[in-house]
Amino acid sequence: MIVLDAAQLAHIVESRQENGETIVFTNGVFDLLHVGHVRYLQEARSLGDALIVAVNSDDSVRKLKGPTRPLVTDSERMEVLDALACIDYVTLFTTQTPVPLIALVKPALYVKGGDYEIDKLPETPIVRAYGGEVRILGFTRGRSTTRLIEAGG
Image (cartoon, rainbow, N blue to C red; front, side, top):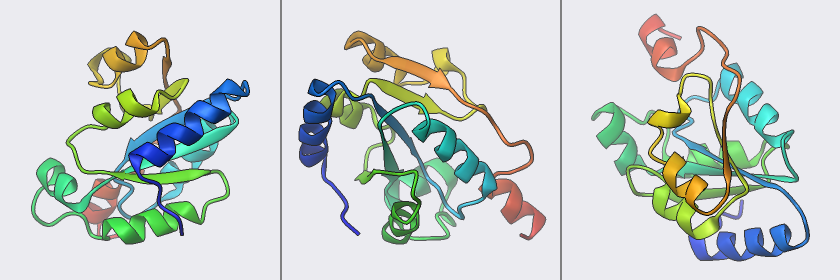
């Protein structure tokens, strides 16, 4: 598995976009990958020529979801995501949001799942500021890691 740092990723995105390619970017925890994640990631990939997935670091997950999360380490979550054919690049971010990473990489399209609202995303202003587009994709009801944990699997 090759995990790209922000500078490597920015260089790749710039080069591919100069060649007319559309780069799609998303981010998340992806703790206990489930069918909702897979459907979402496949839909995201279908919107462009390459898909970047930025994964929350373990520390940022604990700040977001509490001391018992993540269940799976960031390196293992990235390895699982990297194995999916629909994902072209995987990277890690340590901040609470991927805003600094997005500002550097400048993907043409930033996507999130159907449980989000465009105007409430902290990423929306930066994406729009450089001329990118933000879209909300489909959502598989009843599928979330938190719900799976609460239901006992």
